[in-house]
Each structure stands twice: as structure tokens, then as C-alpha cells.
Image 1 (cartoon, helix red, strand yellow):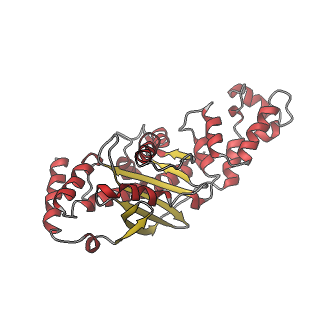
Image 2 (tube, one colour):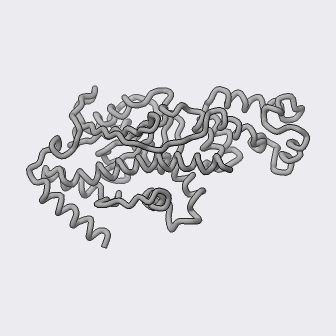
Image 3 (cartoon, helix red, strand yellow):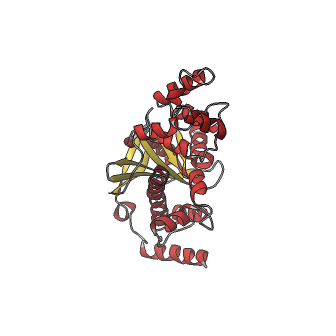
Amino acid sequence: MEYENVYKLKEKLLIENDGILLDDLIKGKEIKTSSGLCYSIKTDSQISFNTLSPQKAKNKILSDLKVLNGIGEVKERKLKENGYKTIEDLINHEKFGKEASKFLKIVGNHDKCKIEDWISAYYSKSHPLILFSSSLSEEDNYVFLDIETLGLFNRPIILLGLAKICGSRITVNQYLSRNAGEESAVLDAFLSNIDENSVFVTFNGQTFDLPFIKNRMKYFKINKTITHPHFDMMHHSRRQWSNKLTNCKLSTIERYLFNIIREDDIPGSLVPEFYETYAKTGNVGPLIPIIEHNQQDIITLAMIFSKLHEQHAEC
């Protein structure tokens, strides 16, 4: 029934938007990159966004002695009973001092990739300590990212959306490939939004979005390395809510946490079909739900990121 309604939506959009131009339908503009033209859509809205302060995040990380080799639950308890409350307290410890100093240096440098690698040696990638390490970044360095493609492997990216936070506002920039020749420009537009301080936040992006982007960059011979810290909220969401939900899809989580019920949304699996209908007919109607779907995914991603910080901060 869901798919039947989606196909009805597509027919409705084709009828309603016959002969309408993209500029008349969507508040965007054509932009020029070093690789050519693509279409840019910018939206700005309010958001309630909270993370830990860098100092609080650091305190939480350093209060867990078990991230040092040889310290388990029993040993940690004994060390804390003897006054070693944090890893900083272990600097002069005969057995653990050297490793404590090494980890403190990594944390002091805010090297989130090395912190994640270190913690992952003792905990899963969904552990709250890894999430806390993301709070060592400045808020405006977060890049919330989501892509729409024409398939699951080695197919073009048709829409790339990213968002940044500034106070109580979230700004979403989406780059649309209006035809097959604009994908490289979409990638260039994305790269213009990141720098050495950027920190990626995605939902299943470690498996899908970032590898997909890198593969398409390789296809177009775009020689730029992406080695930024990356926090995937799918893993953290599963850890936090899988026992309360039938599944941990983004739309399921947003309905549970924020009571968001999307209207005229399309499943990600039908994005290629809607785009191909647009490409064949020239009717821009089928683009609307693709753009709105991507935009809402990014906003929900930022809200989940914030919610996870709030809940773990209370522990």
C-alpha cells in the first residue's frame, strides 16, 4: 500500500508541475564550480542543538581508566579507591604512567581520529566515549551529510546535502545534479564546504555515503583526500534505542523521538525511479520529494546527534 501511494504521488506531481521550471518550483540557484554547473538549494531553520562542552567531554573520557591496557572493571575500582580517579592521576603510576601520558597527549591535541582508534581497541564504535570525543570539536565544524544516488554501487550521485549549525540555526545546502554532466560539479561544491577542521556526522555514512563519495571522486579523477573524523549515528542509535523500536531506520527514530511524521515522503529505494522519471520527461515534479526527503534526513540526523549527547551526558 505504501508503494501504491508513492506511485500515486508521482503521477500527481507530474500533473501539477507540467511545464513548470525548476527555478519557479524550488528556491535555488545555478552555481558554477571548477568542474562546471550544478544547482544549489539553501534552507535555514531553527533547531534545538546541544552537545557537551569540550571540557566536560574531556572529563568523561579521562574518567574511564579502562581505556588503558591492563585495566578492567576490578582493577579500575581498586585504582579509584586508591585515589586514581582519572587517567591524569595515573601519569606517575609505575605500571600505567607511560600509557596514560600517551593517551593524554592524544586527547590534549583533540585528535579525534586517534582518540576513536584508541577507544575502539577497548570498546565498540557505538560506545558513548567515542560520541563524547566528537564534542572536542567546535560546533561550526560539524558537517551533517547525506547523499541520494541512482543505485547502491558505482552509480551517479544525484543530490548531495550537508548542514552546519550556528547557534540555534541549522543551514542545509543541497547540491543537485540536473543531468548526468553535473555530478562532478556537485562533488566540487561539496568539497568547497569542508576544510581541515571539518567533522563528518552521518547515518550509515561510514558504510555508504563517504565511501560512495570517495568512489565517485576517484571516477572523476578528483585528487583530494578525505580523512576527516567521522561519527556515524546509526551505530550509536542502535545501541541506544534498538530495544525500544521495531527497527532503527532514520524515519522510525525520528517518529519515536520527535513525533515527526512525514507527508508525501518516498522510500530511499524509489529515489532513482523518481529521478529517472524527471530525466526522461523533463518534468521537475518528481524532484520535490527527493529534495525534501534528503533535507529532512539531514535535519533529523542533527537532532539525533544532539539527543544522544543529551542522554549520555545524564549518565
